[in-house]
Image (cartoon, rainbow, N blue to C red; front, side, top):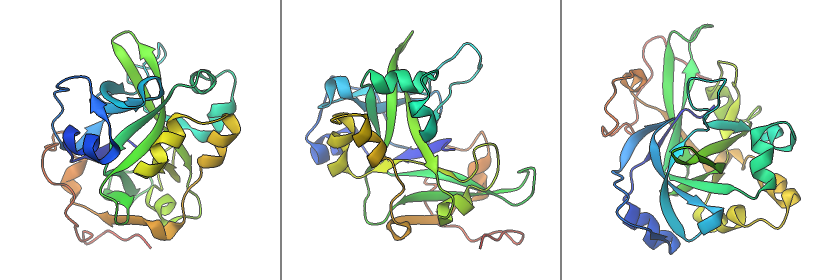
Length: 231
């Protein structure tokens, strides 16, 4: 499950790279730690040339916290909220430069090593997702896939959504996700890329703190602590 991601880019950089526009001053400051419930830049299929602000996570009556991830297999479940947005063509992109996962060092996750994960050689990516109109504006969610067999799946080794990873898109793929021809094209796109395209490394365990400064540069590589090991 993707619980945090990073967008250390100004809105103007995203606009220039993808020939987009924003409706006004979005009030977004580049940050190294975005989490569910935060207001984030998003590109929606309804206005695919415009960057606007949306909230990361769907709000449901059964949950006190926003649900920020949608499992790939739930897209075709006609009883799910995700399938409804798929059928309505409500696709979105959340611009990012990387996301974070945690490697559990014990069975209960009391000791965890945070990892930064991105695409090699690409400072800007997009997290593919869905959106809907919420009570306070647009809500977004990101698509997660089964990452079993990839090293990034081994990184995310704990919790109920272990061995999963968000679906990342390169900028030249954004338009295809936002304007698919049919559901079959969507499902064909959602697949993990070859493992050698990913870039990942451990970062400071201080990132785990709920009080961690979101504007601190958490991208700096960090050696494992004396108890930590991965592969």
